[in-house]
Length: 203
Image (cartoon, rainbow, N blue to C red; front, side):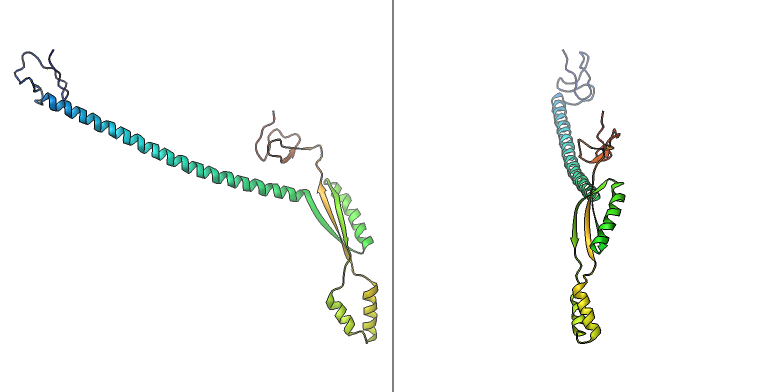
């Protein structure tokens, strides 16, 4: 069987006059053609390997970049969620102050507590602080002590106390119209089928 040239794919015939080591069609030496083909194959294989390695490095770099971006996004979402949770917590607890004499402050508190109850806010704790005159007022009264009016003012300040402050803390109490999301623990409406905070779907 006659050899086939690896360069031009010509198969040698009996009628060819070219030397046995040389292709009658393209004139290349068979041995050189084989070496050339092998070298070319090695180069192509190396190029394929280099290309795959380059693609792998690009892929790893992109994955690392995506991981960093994902971590930043998760951190941002976590911070926003914490901020929202704190804001929600602040809304659940409200502190109001009623200024005046103790009886007057209590009357203001009782009237306002009815309005607050309409919005599901109920008193949790209260604290009464008696008002006090400042040091400046006492010094002025003391300076005028020897004047009749100054003496009267001084006596008045000792007997009559200034308006105090009644501080009341209200807490929002959930009704049956709301529920707590089983995934993010936020408060949502009872009829909700999708949580507006974490998008959890209720089946």
